[in-house]
Length: 183
Image (tube, rainbow, N blue to C red; front, side, top):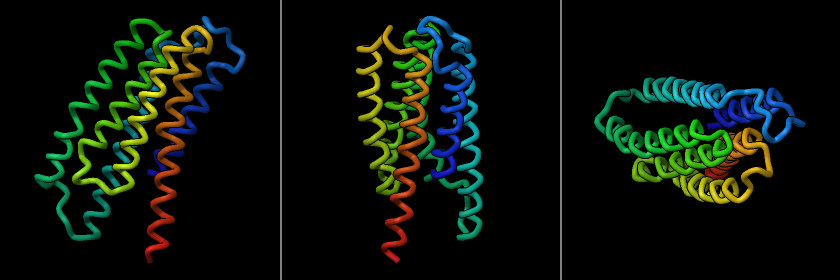
């Protein structure tokens, strides 16, 4: 969780710098497709790293990786993640001004996905799910209220940095500190 938070912060900041701090509100130096593909590559890399670390931990503990419980978790995650991805991406490609709303839908659907596996997840993951859902809904409200006032790519990068960067860093740090306090 710590590595994905750092990676998301780096991607969000670098995208914002690529777009340009002072860019006009209707000037788009980056296409919606480039923005979406960059964040999807980040999510795919985070997923691959998570699978690698989970496999490594399973081999250390002597547990098999491919279990019915893991398949059930993926079946629980898939509907909300796919719905959020499709709805957010279609909304973003419909009109670039809705890119922040699309990012907010991604964040909300990630929160719903985490809550859908709450029986198998740690308390920190359940807490992160509630935070993501609340942040996603708040971001959706803000993005619809500020349309045309803030550059949509800057606002969408801000949402993604806060959600997948800062929140992951805060929850992972809190989990580490709590585990050390318990020991």
